[in-house]
Image (cartoon, rainbow over all chains, first blue to last red; front, side, top):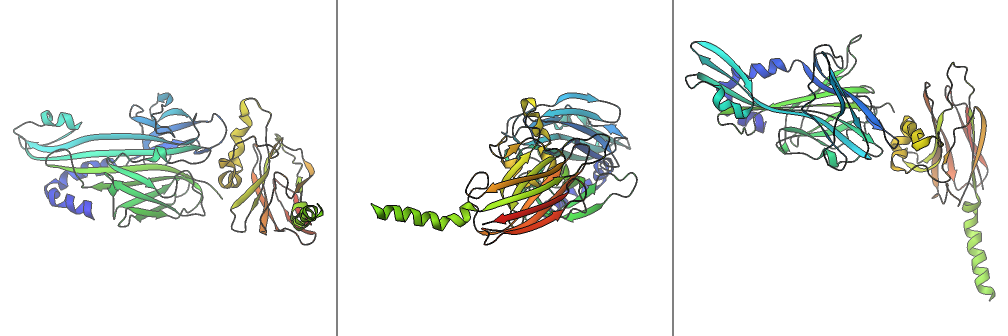
Length: 271
Length: 171
């Protein structure tokens, strides 16, 4: 509970502001690759990107593609191809021209605030840089939240590699113990959650299987241990959505609370 | 100079039971009455009892397609791909081969020769995995002991993508 506790000391007055991102996160952000395990000399994948309640049904709002990045197996920056954004989802392609594991990632950093002005509660959302001028000087009860979010998925041509999985040390990230493209239903998978490069202990991870439209999807919750590690026993093969969120850590904004979220989509293959 | 000749002959004699042994696979690819039929991709490999792949003996796929496009579906032989295929460079001499038509096929792998080579003594499974476009996948396993002391046969029977399979080892 290191992070939560450190945050709690500074955060007593920030509780009200927490409700804003929490309510927004009821909608799930996701990247859905057409395949995660590939062979051949020049395979491509197509990826859906959307925000919705049910997984993986694009029935709410498209995810914008301008924040989506590809990290090639050799660690270099890749590119998305043929991006298009519709009402409910975006789609784009990734050409796997190198052998190894690709990371597809959408990161966002920003700030939100609530304050009172003339007896009214105001809310604001924007970048950390805009914050200084966004809130009027006469505002009272100013509560600021710095947000970092990360949405990821992975695809591998040939044997899985780890270069693209290297951590940036910013926000909430996943350190693989089990490789995210080496998952089968009969084998438990272990991953580590890391906040700003340090183990994120005692964090709840929500695991939801896709395909819940016609029958209830498998959902489970696991907690990270002292080293940030958590293990998932897959109910069956399928596409899974995992999410974790923390509050605390160090904010780059003075007097701000910090929140960070991590989402990934994983494919678990049949044996 | 008789002594060196004796030595060589003696060494050869000691090694010969393993080297001369044969591993014979009999495999039936069933004839299926389906609207759209494609021959299955088939991988044949040797694994230890704990399912660790030891050696891939054969991969039958669309080797002749231009730009190695036939390799795109190798990953559909999921078990083989995860345990062996993804770490291999294909096409591989003596391992890659064209897809086979429905019917009975016999392949003999010779001890000491590629692709079987010198298999360490032990208990193994011969594994066959088939994956068919617009079809399904099936995996069969038949155990064998290596090197064989006597002729021995084990068998397995498929229900969808593969028919009867038998493995015979011969000293």
